[in-house]
Length: 313
Image (cartoon, rainbow, N blue to C red):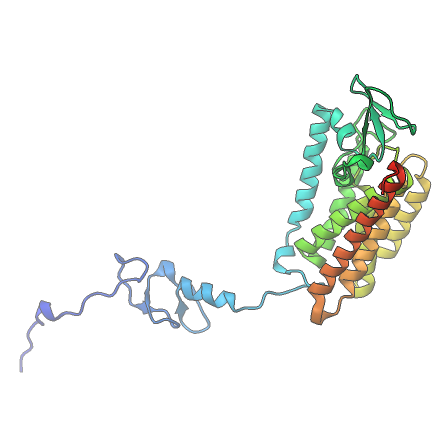
């Protein structure tokens, strides 16, 4: 018998990648059975998957969570901590260029601004041509903006060490707490603790102009102490850490805002308890409710203090 060449017209058409029609392919996706080229192949337990099947499969995989409910993968790099440090740094540069920013954004409850634009201490009276400013007069934003400002190099006892020490503390605590909580919960903790520090300053010393991230950082320290007790894991030495913060608050009371430190400490500790001991079955709901209740309490305190200072009802 003899063989002859097959008729070219009977050859089956070449198979091509479903995503790249100009590329021949002889490998199929083991999930959807479509042909895929090397650029579209993804290793699988059996054979290869196409990029679309990999994407669909990843949606059904439950994301790993920390004990406190945050996304473990998102906390690998402390992005929020770095962002907060960068924001504080940018605000400090803005202060250097425009020092009057401090007077406009500090945690001042009641103050006066003269016709010359200079700030004056509020003495309980108003004067013609003199403007009353502060949280008591609707400038509530000061409760948060003050936490992103720091003493200028030519001002105060600490000068530039004020921001350097605060940012070091933020990096030291933040990178660990962000890993424990995840980004969203960590940012909520930081901002609410900062708010708590501003509110305490307003309640106790409304005529003082205060700046600094210390209230938020004291809140992080208190929350970390709670978390370390809950996890039974303490890489930073939470007991010694909180004692050190308390000692510093007492020793520096005459030259720093102990009111803001105390407010941040108590607020951060309360939020830490809500985050750490929320039942797993309703963890996110209880944590969100705890944070919301704390914010409402702080707002109520500001309203009551404002009514007291301004005589309104």
